[in-house]
Image (tube, rainbow, N blue to C red; front, side):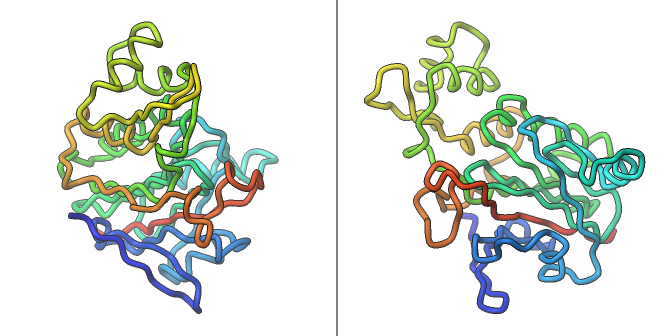
Length: 259
């Protein structure tokens, strides 16, 4: 239904999604390491200004203006947050990930975009719904939003404790004891959980939990795309913290369009 395309820039591969066709965007591979967003933005849109964050596994979502204000009034080079929402045309917003989910969002009416870093902690803190609430406060309507989740660790290889599964799962099933939350998640038609042979462990698909959060907000399946790539299982293209235990990342970015 949604298609993903490989592109090459000077022989280096990156990925785009047809759902985000109206915007210059890319889920970049490890081949671009160690280039930073200001070096990657010209690949997408030479006239755009690049913005990035110091990611902290939370649910704070900032605008470029707030990032600039923070950097100008503190000693920090980067603002602490895990999401960026454009507020003008030609702003390139970027997030870094290794196994966590990079989420790019575009609004077909306003041209506004968002880039989010949704690991299990950010997903448990509902960073995607937070960002969407912020976009709505800036004039977006749900029906106009398009969401693409890039390469991330897949459920079949992502082992977590039952407690972690319950914490993230309680965002989509009513609160209860951890065992009840996990049991309810297992019973969902498109369950984000797989069983694990080790006691007290399960396999968790974080992207699927984000998809369920979006579904509960009222998104249709046509508005949401998930990349068919697992960072852990695609070593030729993606860094995986679980696989290599190295602090290396790939970047994902999207450029806001003019009205």
